Length: 77
Image (cartoon, rainbow, N blue to C red; front, side, top):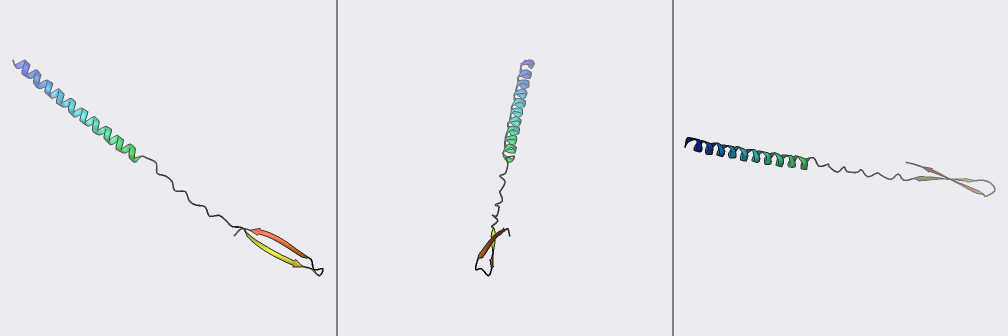
């Protein structure tokens, strides 16, 4: 009789230990999932490049013969 009750107690203890181990494993899995969510890459914000506008300098040269020469020189600011 002592053996059968002892076996029952042992079986119950083993079951309890197994349940605890399963719970711990589930908790670890949940923690890992949470960590994975945190590891998502953050999107990098792209800086908008300012367009450089070309400025034109116009030089007029006049001669005695009433001819006009126009020179365009493009310069970046």
